[in-house]
Length: 179
Image 1 (spheres, rainbow, N blue to C red):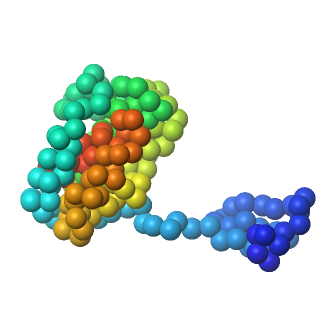
Image 2: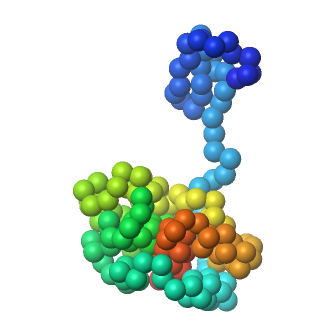
């Protein structure tokens, strides 16, 4: 049966990656993209283009320092996902993409502090970043910095997200890729 053919009021269950009716999967649910990016290397010219794109726009939340300990950034700034969290998420995701050992310390601090320092939504974003999972716009930037794609359009799409989120995610990606 297709989802449109289900009569109203039927009992359905959700779990194990599917929607079920009478013990049979009706709809299989899966991601349409892999949210994890793995970089073999960073192309210096591509990283420079990302950094230039970020620095071409003034920081939208000047109260958030670009370089501070994770403990000082979590929960800092305005928004449903505070600017400091977006910065840490980008930084952590880039460290994970590059498989750098610094990701373990940053991830440990995030796991220890996020639940008490930030919003639930932002804590989920940070947990995903700790697994190396990012939104498609950030994944495109990481791939472009690794040499697969054009950094300019990818960075433009990411920088255009939200009031502050895109800028801080991009800045965090640039920091993690430069590490």
